[in-house]
Length: 181
Image 1: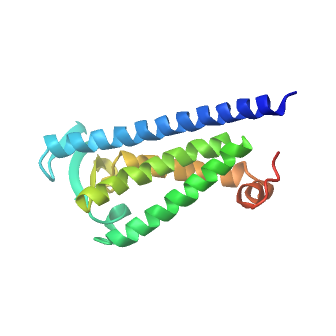
Image 2 (image 1 turned 45 degrees about the horizontal axis):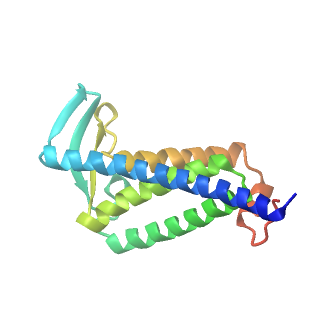
Image 3 (image 1 turned 30 degrees about the vertical axis):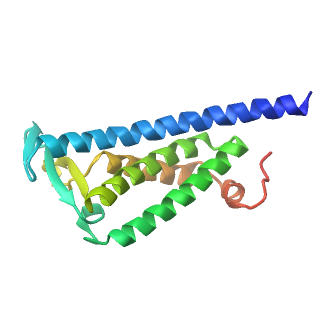
């Protein structure tokens, strides 16, 4: 078989997967940002709209901290952490893509990175994050769609680490040599 043809086919498959990932990434970020825009432009700060009375409501707050309001006004810390997470996540994603493996990990990374970027956009623009999803029944802290991406992605990643991936998988993903061919 012609190696040039095989490489062209591989490159076009990779390009297609990258395009699909970028579109998914942008769609997830757009969903988060549009929701936040609608909340910010149609509600007054601290207003609530009951969705399921005494269970779930849309409650508009601004969070200058991290999860549950921790580390208030630490924008430099958040920026550094976000940039590190994005760089590491992107590098792992691309490595798995070029090895043509770990599709589930790549999907999870798209979720986590989309959530990180969604909240990072808010922090850059406003110095706070717009939160609006509130489970009143359990008095859970108010959160947003980007938080959902990160949380779901984190728990899915934890599930993969505990139940699916083996030590060899981590050696392959994090090694400097491509052992998976």
